[in-house]
Length: 71
Image (cartoon, rainbow, N blue to C red; front, side, top):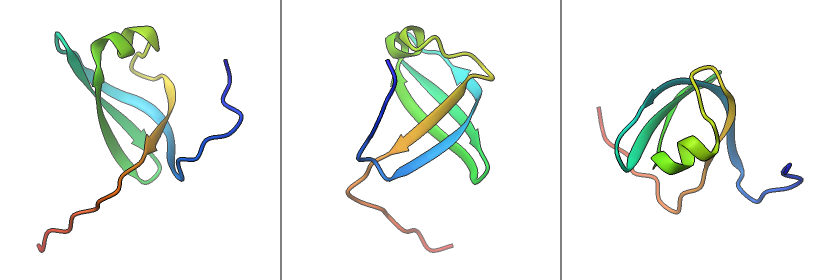
């Protein structure tokens, strides 16, 4: 299957840098030219996508809220 179009505007192409596997969910760090994007997805999805360190991926970010913290 290949994606021909998607409505998510915030897309970050990168490589999987680290996978922290859990029993139910796993943390995926994706290294992009703009920095690290971290995603938490089901471990079942990690296996179904056959994700490994070094895999080429696209992180799709869709959010209705962005919070700001003062430094």
